[in-house]
Image 1 (cartoon, rainbow, N blue to C red):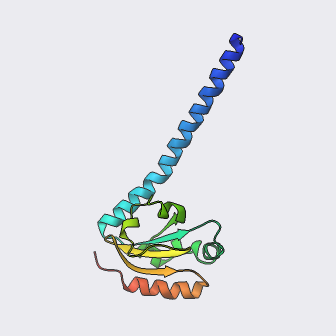
Image 2 (image 1 turned 180 degrees about the horizontal axis):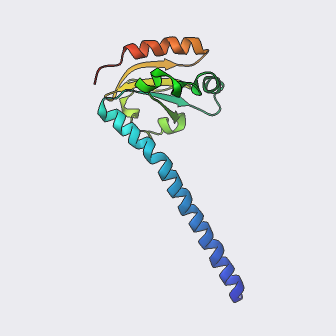
Image 3 (image 1 turned 45 degrees about the vertical axis):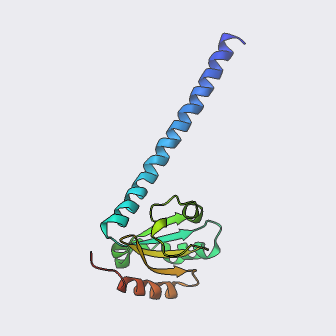
Length: 146
């Protein structure tokens, strides 16, 4: 192998390592605030609405289209912020609030209302926006003062 080929191989390897390092830093930067928000919600007494979903789930896609886009703009979102969690991450215990659920999550979508590391309410499934908003109203009534 000539000097040029050796340098090219080192450059390719260094470039790959650099890309992997950058990908790791980006992933950490994205997930660290989510973990911090979950930790804060679990220990601060602030309620949170965990939305456990799957990209393959038709009802999840329907929820995202009908409710997901407007939820952050609602008063309910201020009192009960929505946090999206992939079902694979939830089932693998890669979320701080898994231990707070009162029962196993068996399907998507599942919405868990958690406050002070205690599950207050749950919505399993999604069929239409009106039923979601009715169930969310019930959840809002269960929020305990901090």
